Figure 1 (cartoon, chains in turn yellow, red):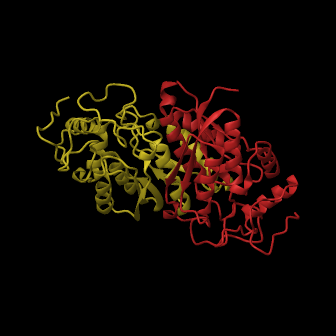
Figure 2 (tube, chains in turn orange, brown):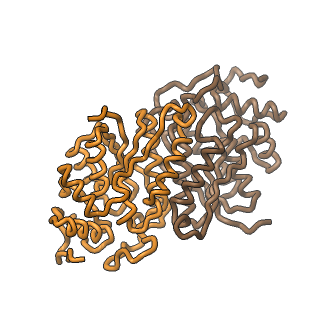
Figure 3 (cartoon, rainbow over the protein chains, first blue to last red):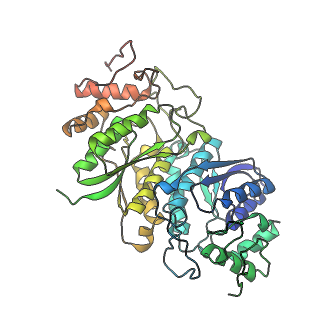
Length: 235
Length: 235
């Protein structure tokens, strides 16, 4: 068992960040969970993040307000409709939020520096990544390099900050299987970009399609509820 | 006269960012000013930024709320006293806000992407920089490299984002002289980390000392008011 060290874990309340938090704990880190309330349509994410933080156990959980709707430009934060029924069709989708991971990692960097932590965890994924540029390994490497020049550590040479991306080369199926090994209850999580007013997932947006396909490929039933008619999980 | 292009200009309301905005305009850019209300003690900065944006002329001015007090760790956002009377004594000062420029540049990056802008201006300065790691040229270069991997432009290859730092190798004296050439009225600006309740600058914090020294070396009178007894400008 490695010595416990503080780590900042970005936690959205979805499958990927929840699994990432479970992995950080399993690796012996003391997690400090950071959730950003950025004006996303799917505010159910925030409640999910709070449930997950309580259930998995964290040293503390900060929910930070940052209204990215000010800038617009994404279906997740503005009035552009969330696409339905033609998912993963190539290119960068309209659900991409400009510079989101850069902003979130920058905020995690600030907290890590205050905590004296050298470790940030983010659940980005380069395979089932829906085409977002800020989920690619070369981006993460460039962020880490910049971060090591941005902080006291970069001047004083005392620390080396690492951005951990334990999911980056996993498929959604493998992520779910890893979470199952670690005892994660995915019934706590929320993925849908466009949930119904009763809280059920739409089953048709990119996030739902990726999620359902992952559970189907892992041979598991997704424990969350979907809007009827029930979506097909045969891909 | 170059063709007008959109640029995002980080504007704090101090001498450096005000001069940077004037330079962006002089270079033919259409400036979109971004000010972050991050929980700084010196909220007079925000009013100064609004005055400067109106006076110099911008396409729009966004004041974004982001409460960095959540993380603590700086004299500018927490209860650590602002040092007085022994400025610029070496090392990284307690007024350093963890990852501040990284966070601000990330927010500028998001807005630039929405605007379709390839240009961000920030008034960092590597000479009179008070020892902040995120004011060094190698940091700015690393941020720019990361930013070009973070965005649609990085995937689609259509754009190349540039972080402009027109002040990076200037002394405070040279910055003030450049602003004077461009007709900037520094009476609108605010620099003090610890202003008195009547709005006068303390004259003793690092920011005041740098400012007063810059005006003295430029052979100019600083047009703002200082708390009495009047500070010495003989450095």
